[in-house]
Length: 423
Length: 215
Image (cartoon, rainbow over all chains, first blue to last red):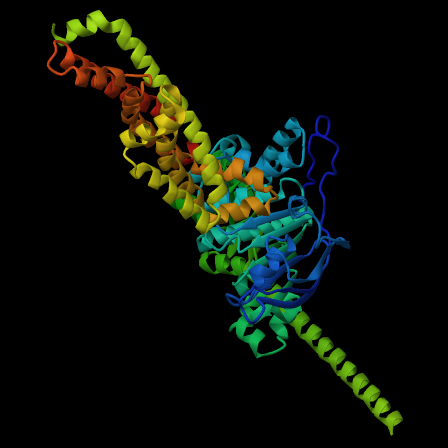
C-alpha cells in the first residue's frame, strides 16, 4: 500500500505532507569548455513532466552527467535556459536552487565524519526546520528507505554496507522534500544483487512520492527498469530518441538506438512489467506457531496439497507438501522445503520468471515491504501475462506505424500543394 | 652538589622557567595554528598559491634559529617580542603544509555532494572540508609543537623566557660547580614538557576527531 508521508506537524513548521514533482524544461542548453573546440553538451532541449522518472542513458563521455549537473547548476550552462515549474532558474542563486533539488550520486557521497542522522538532517537544517521537525524527519526518512531508525540513527557511514550507504544517500537527497531528484549513476558502485534491490526500492519510493526524477546511467537495462521515459543520448548529449521504454524497445529510431538496446528485446520487455500488474494468487498458509494438529488437518482435508508456512513475522518460511509431513515422521523441523527466493510487488516479471524457473514447484512467493507474505505468482500466470503483453505491444506498434503513415501522407500532400501553388 | 640536590634547592626557579617555557610555546602554537590554517584555507585551491605558501614557509625554516633571533634583536628589541615572532614563524610550516595537503586530499566527490545539496562555500569549508582535513592538521600541530619546544630554548639568547635560561646559563659558566646540573635541568625539563604536550595532543585528537573518520 502506498503510505502517505506525514510528519508530526504539531511542533514542526507547517509543511505539506509531501511535495510531488515539478516540471523541468531544458531549452537549448549548451556547455562548452574553454580550450576545447567542440561543446561537451550541445543544444539540448527536453520537456520533463511533473512526477515523471526520466532516464538519461548513453555511452560514457556522451555528456549525460554534464547535462544532469546543469539542472542544479553544479556546472553552469554556457547558453540556454532551465525552467523548473515554469520558473526560470538559470540565474537564480545556485545555493538556494540546490536546496530545492535532491541530489544523489555514485558511492553515496555521505560525509564520513557525520552520523547517518546528521547526514540526513543536513538539508532540512539548512532550510531552517525546527529541531524537533528535523528529528522526526530523519526517523521518517530512514523508515522510508527501509532502514530501522533506532539501529541506524547513530551509525557512521563506514559502518554501513554499500547498499545501506546508498539508501541513506537517497534519504538525504529526499529529506527536505524537494520536488525534483537528480541521481547521477547512484547504483553504479554496488554489486548487482544490491543494485537490483535498490532499484526495486526506488520504484517503490517513487510510487509513494511522485517526485520528478532525472536519473543518469549507462546501463540500458537499468533504464528500462526504472524509467517512465528514456532519453538515449549520443555524443554531445544529442538526443537520439526520447520515448517510453516500450516504444524504444519495439521501435528504435535508428541503428544507434537499436545498438544500444542490444539483443533480446523481447526478454527485456519482461523488465517493463511488475508483479503488481499481474494476478497475485492467494495461497493457503499456516504459521510456525500453529499447533501441529491443525496443520495436519489442513493438509489432510483434501483441498490443498501444499501449504506455505510463515514465520513469526509473517514472512514465507517453508513450502509444505502433503507427503513431507509423513516422511518427516511428524517433525516440523525437518519437513518441507525452505523458501529460497521471494519477490516484491515492485519486482519485474523478469525477476519473477527467474525465481519461478529456479523453484521446483514453479511458483514464487510475493512479499510486502517488510517481507510479509502477500500471495504467489506461478508459471501459468506469467505465461498468460507475457502473451497479453506482447499482443498489446504488437497492436501499439501497428497503431504507431499507422499514425506515422498518416503523417507521411499528410506531409506529402502539403508539399504537393505547396509545390502546386508555386508553379 | 649532585643533580637532585640542585633541583631540590632551585625548584622554585625551575618551575617558573618550565611554566614560562610551556606558556610561550602554547601561546605561539595557538597563533601559528590560526595563522597556518588561515594561510592553508586561502591558498589550497590554487596550485600556485599552495606551492607559494609551502615554499615560503619552508624557506623560513632553513634560516638557523639562532641567527634569526639575533637578527631580530635590533629590530624588535630583547625579551618576549623576538621569542614570539620566531616561535610563530617556525611553527607555521608543518601546519600550513598539512592543512593544504589535508584540504586537497578531501574526496572530490564529497565536495561535489556538499555543493549539490546546497551548501555555501563557507559552510562547505567549515562543515565538510576542515573536519575531514582535521586529522592531518592536528598532526602538523603536533610536529610543530615538538619543534618549538627545542627552538624556544634559544629564546634565552635574546633574554626571552623559559628553560633556555638554564641551558645558556650553564653553558656560559662551564667549569663552575653547577654548570652541568643547570644544562641538564633545562634539557630534561624540555623533554618532559614535550612528552606532556604530546600526550595532550593524543587526548585532543580523541576528543576532536569524529568517530567516523578516526583511524
